[in-house]
Image (cartoon, rainbow over all chains, first blue to last red; front, side):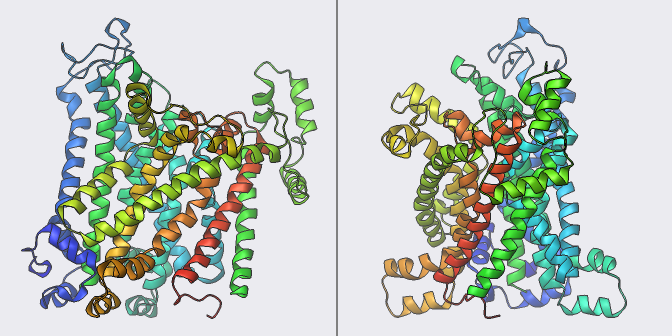
Length: 316
Length: 317
């Protein structure tokens, strides 16, 4: 802890780290860090970063709301009840009801479950595929690398929403297909980032030493390259969650999202917008707010991890 | 430089051909879909067979591809199945509209984001920096369709000062003649871009401010304004230039959501309609145009690098 100068507030650290004043840390910093593992300094930097903790706290509260909320707040989200349609907030429905008579608060919890699940699933798949692809390309080098990266360039040459439009029209969307399609677009960035890291790592002594001791390519990737690029991987993974939630909402708005009875925040929001001019504000602002807050929270975490890694790198 | 450019052009050609193959495979994943989408659900098997043979859709995939490439090389992008208009005519109608709308919004975003990022870098850690960072996070995290509709609700419905629809003229001159109608679409598109550009600008300006040459400039008594203009601005523009280069494809591909909300038929809606009606020639043609634009944008960013940063010289390594 002392190594990262816990006395400094998060803001000052941010300013120092961000300003790139490499030499300003306490003299013991570099020495201390070198003796510890890769994880603890990064974790403690993260823990003392106020932005990171705020973001993480927001994510935890929202996850509890979505997954534990329905246990305490039971609502009917299965059968349509037209006699209860578009009731304003109050009278047992704190956020009113939607045009199908579903309770909006309960629907937010249910919709949040699929939005969060989608974000996490896309991020997990993206990270695994992108990391392996990038690490293999970077480690192999030469013609293999060139071919693998041209494939990535090809996919990247088309804006992602356009690609999604073509693909989504070919399949009947369900949650798994949407996860698969969004993953097909987002692993590219992660592959590029990891390859970039691996290109610098593979010339380092510890990788050459491992290779000299007879470690195979697979072992080098899993034991050396991936753990050492974990920062870049984590940052990208958090941003991917945020982006996936936003992409799904854009698809819902274009009518290419998950079909009803399925609920997610993006679908709720874009359906709600149809009623904005009828004065049914409770169909728009609650899903809008929770969606924006969630995406902001994940972006805050990603940004903070990047900052804390910067501090670590600069004080090495 | 020439050798470098030739090498990059070679890579670019590979990417564009790869893109064509990829699109070709993707749209043929569901055989017979084009005929059904164009002729309707009640089309008889006979009519579907005629459609397929007219457009060569019953040929093997590789032969269709060769035929298509041959057409493209001869400057023919084919004819839309559903509109029966040459694809090149469609693109020529739609593309200028997007170049105008997205070009304007990119310029607007840069004019706001660059000074904003430098301001935040100078004031880093202060209250205004935190407030602006929070604001850009929020802007970046808001779905653009929500912006668009809330802006319409405020400025067109409540205040009644701006029209809710983008200019409907078909020529660029006609669109420019109606600047009030351009405000909301341009603002919608610029808001999200400002958020991300200003983040990049802020972090690169922070890096530049910590450099020795800034200290030297300050030590020799150069006024702050000149330091910011001459040294910080130029040196911290590099990442933003990359972003603009990368966004070139985005400008050409159009903004399907803004086009939909503001009823401004550009490339985005063309893609969207072509994708929903399985209009293969339109999809292939517009993908080709966007792919070429992407590659050109990346190349332009590289060249701009060399101009902005004299240390970067291509072709010597």
